Image (cartoon, rainbow, N blue to C red; front, side, top):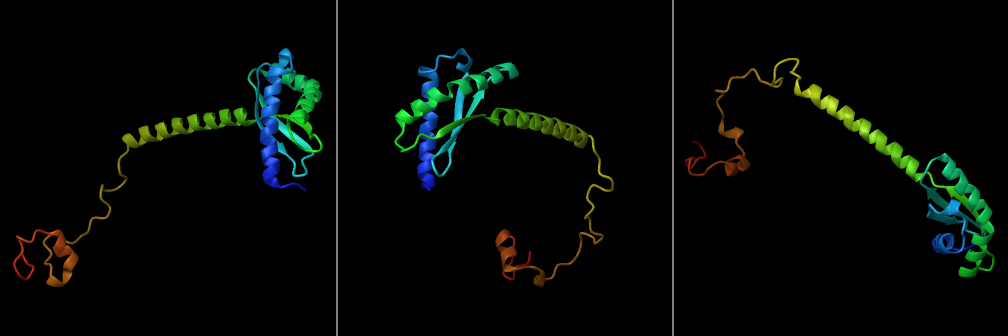
Length: 169
């Protein structure tokens, strides 16, 4: 069992080697638009999963998958030359679903913005169901205030010049 940190470093190295080999060694036109996005290696360093994306329709993506399967041996050989492990890991290519998930999230965000705009438009024309201030008190504004109602903190917030020495106005 290898160290997980070593497996992560090896995965990054495999990702770079495969991406470079796709550009230099493999001459298949089906693999022109492939972008290697990630690689994962098992902790025993025996199997590597390489994630890739291809922009285009389903036919282009299917052709790219077939091209990668055909070039798997050349790519594994190139990985074996460029990494320092006793056994070269097997390669598995998996189409990365991040662009699909990102487009779904963008669609959900557009829908949320549209609904927020609808709610804002409804709120602009809305009126209160009852009175505008439901917390109005029934007590009149001319209530006598005792000196016990004031704290020292309240005195600090008022102008000292308007108060006499007892703290009254």
